[in-house]
Length: 440
Image (cartoon, rainbow, N blue to C red):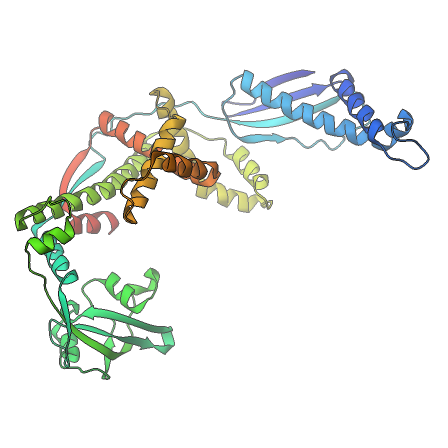
């Protein structure tokens, strides 16, 4: 057997594999001999079928099968030994005059090569990092929410400015029929408030959805409509009032603090506000980190220039999936996936150059941390280590789940690396301003 590689250019190569009879004949004979022992053909005792008959019936198909196995194994070994960094998989070149009856065979495969490039981590303060803080207004609102959640509820005959109204919102044309509860205070504008204040159970009220609440997402939840339509929704809905209640806020006292924090860590209003601020900013940090990683990704893609073997990749995409794509479909698929591919290559380059590795035990520990958090939400604060190991082992046996956790952990490692090795333009903002600025 002879394998050679010809570089077409810096991004494309062709590998040629020449196979002669001596390369596969011994294996073919071994397989046919085994067939002969097991063959059950009328007129012959088992194991005594003439070899000539076995060869005539199975010889060619066995030979083709063994040549293909040898070809695949040899090609993979060659790519590994030559340390060829390829994209996608080798694409066999079609040979119109190929003949399986020949003594020797020649096969050619197209390769798409990973480009050589360098990654510049000097962001020059072009990447913005947000420090999201919990404002006094946000803390006030959360204190109020806590008092409401643990408050005492009573029924009212007539809706007031501070009452909760439960009813069914209906608009048949837009397929809206949703029972929801809202606070009259949350309605936007005096016009809408006046329609609801004074209402009694059984009353039917017409409301315009445009600017019904300060936050469109609240309207989305109340009407049960999709995010895609809520911002432009301008219709009339009927509200049939079914229940009117008022919540007497809970006192900010030791009884409430003990309900909220059984460990006694909070005993004053000041400590409660500090705890709310701390917890809120931990959550904000996660969103800020995700935004930062997104911004770094965009920056690196935009500022790391290299060519890709586009023609090869489109050809590979056309045949890589379950359904074969047309040339136009493959080109469209390549256009959609090019950005992601570029970042995969950049990410791999950064990890290789900076010896950033992911050990299996790290993945196990990460999975266990994820499981521990979920179990805590259901009241199991101290699960056994063996139980965590067993659950983590089952999760990591699922290839899709394992890849998802691996991707998350790699992102964490890279974010830590970026924070240590890049300089960002920092900006302190409230959560509301962060949402407005980042998500427009």
